[in-house]
Amino acid sequence: MQAIAKRKTKNKTSSDTMRYLKKNKWLYILLIPGLLYFVLFRYLPMFGLVIAFKDYDIFKGIFDSAWVGLDNFRTVFGSTDFKQVFSNTIVISLLKILIGFPVPIILALMLNEMRCIKFSRISQTVLYLPHFLSWVVIGGIMLNIFSPTYGIVGEIYRLFGHDPVNLLASKEHFRGILILSDIWKESGWGTIVYLAALTQIDPNLYEAASIDGASKWKQTLHITLPAISGIIVMLLILRIGKVMNAGFQQIMVLQTPLVQSISDIFDTYVYRTGLKRGQYSIAATVDMFKSVIALVLVVGTDKLSKKIGEEGLL
Image (tube, rainbow, N blue to C red; front, top):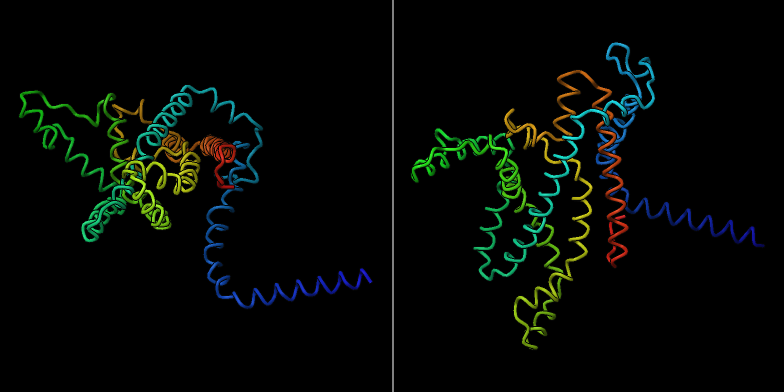
């Protein structure tokens, strides 16, 4: 009897599943292009990481190249370039997180408080626009601003009777320019998620707080920020997972030999060793190291967020 009951339950479950799939078939068909993209361009290329354990020869191919075990990792970790690149990547990424991460939250709170809808929409459009500019275009704008011969900054130096300084070639100022240009380009775009989260807050909470005499600052502190804390933590986890990616395009466009010692990051190192010097195994080794560190950071941050009472990401 139990076997018959189990068979009936199984048949019923299968029937429900087929009915569900048939009902939502177009949604699953729409999902196919996205899945194909990830399979072809994200998962299949992972098999190429095997060259990190080989002395890869482009003429022999991946399968016929000789295995070298962990020799490539010893070479990478023992080089002086690796220490410098690792330090630069961590410093630039952490500065971008510490200074740049709160900016979209502040902008979203300010936009949310605007009562003039037209002005608010114009402000959002102006803030979003830099996101659509490529780093090549922004690099041209930066050169026109900071050039000591024809840039605005050079003119300001001359106006006050000082010799112009090339800030893009200055080790003291280059990282600051990187951080500020990244904030200018991406902060407006980063407000979208926070603005969407702010619309989900119950307006009755603000009315009740206002009746109790709470100021705007106290309403923000005790209602708004706790309401969007889950989104903030989730985006912070994703941002920390990209710590090893400090901004390849930005640095490639703005970097000069004079500031290479403080701006050379893993991505530029991989580009230089892999594509320019033809050391594909070394480049794959560095890339694998980056991926492992990113995975550890995401999992660690996710567990930490759950310990402090947030939902986390995984």
